[in-house]
Length: 372
Image 1 (cartoon, helix red, strand yellow):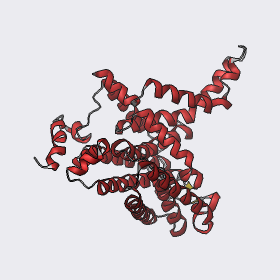
Image 2 (spheres, one colour; image 1 turned 180 degrees about the vertical axis):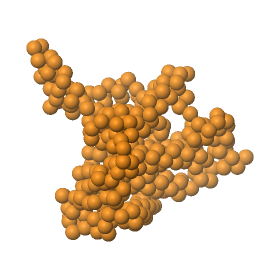
Image 3 (cartoon, helix red, strand yellow; image 1 turned 90 degrees about the vertical axis):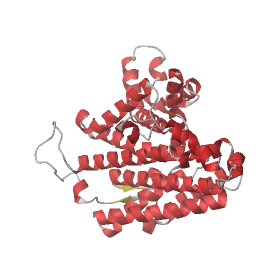
Image 4 (cartoon, helix red, strand yellow; image 1 turned 45 degrees about the vertical axis):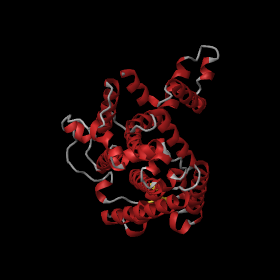
């Protein structure tokens, strides 16, 4: 039996004819009723957020969740499926954001500017991913991680120094195409009490592009290519002995991951109408990505959905909930100070430690294990 058939056989055996849903999910069903309900709830709430929750904060939080689902899923392709620990992922996130920002700021607020900025950012990300892969993936894992950390730090410094192009520390603010501006009206009358304006169009642009990219990543990890990546992750020497070019496959995975992260950065810039070093290039974002991957579950694309949703919601609303709790317990000794909103980062860290202890394989891994 050839090496190719050896690794594609599991893929063929796991394909089930479950109808249109199975095809849409690349035959990678959640395999847990609880997980299916959670994922369906997240999808429905994100799709209906503008109509369910009035105000700018809920829709902004939902848009951020959509962006981070793509960003975390793209990183999980590297870490969970390929076994590559890279700290340069935010660099590609920033390239996408700056590509859109620079193009719209210099060329004007048109769709052609968006296309030019996105294509230029994708091209630059692909070139850098290939360069990093070919130069670094031959070395040991810890040295590769250090190289990517150095590259990411250099990119952040470069973005801060090239103020004539990137706006420096202040970043770039820009105008969106007319169809994405709040003053634009797609419908003259409100729909279910919500104005169908450019802000709503921008949200659904982010939502559907994020959904499409996520489904593409799901298709990739469940393809023969994805099975080879998993074989390399499990035993690099065995995969190489079977005839697979490990560096070539890992470089390809790095490029795909970088392109998806670039799209996420472009979506973030379009939504915020701004991009700067702290928005897309900060090392704290890289830490957040790692936390989301671990919380959701490595090597499971669905883990990116749950991890991103939980983490962004905690970032957005944990402080508000703690403030309400502290006010409600004003007459109780010690407790109001213990849950004071200024200590929200402490409690967020505690929740992360508890989640890792309770779900060592991530939430998705635990739910799938409980089904067995």
